[in-house]
Length: 168
Picture 1 (cartoon, rainbow, N blue to C red):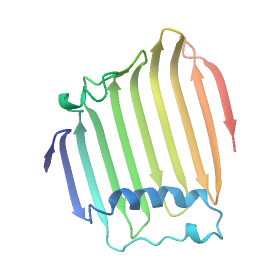
Picture 2 (cartoon, rainbow, N blue to C red):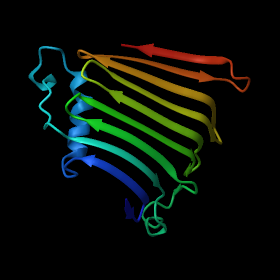
Picture 3 (cartoon, rainbow, N blue to C red):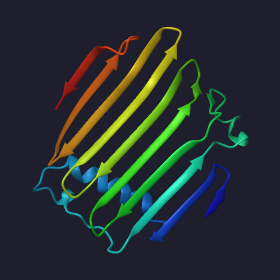
Picture 4 (cartoon, helix red, strand yellow):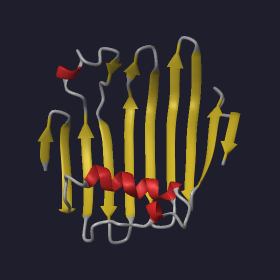
């Protein structure tokens, strides 16, 4: 269990914390390369595994650096990493925050990377802004063998599908 200026974190397992950010980025990026690319080869150190739970909130001392950002409720982060199986899972949930005139509510991010594919789902329950108002918006990304498919959905006030954009 660790205490930091951002809150509490519980990290268990066998891992090298100095390698974690670069390792996680490599596990995600590999799906953006074609199958035959040398960048796609999993060159992960063996035996790295981690279970992570955290409740994070920016300290008041950062408010001078980011005066437009206001986060009053902690973000919850859960994650798992296993280099032997090529698994990376991250789940982030933030009830609400304010950035300048944007007020997003219920922000969620779910990421799962395996040896075969990458799946990411980002969702915002509601976004208020003087010139823009969005309700239940989600973005789904699926990556495999250098192909990235995405789907953006936005609902109206009645929770009916209003916009849908997709691509590959």
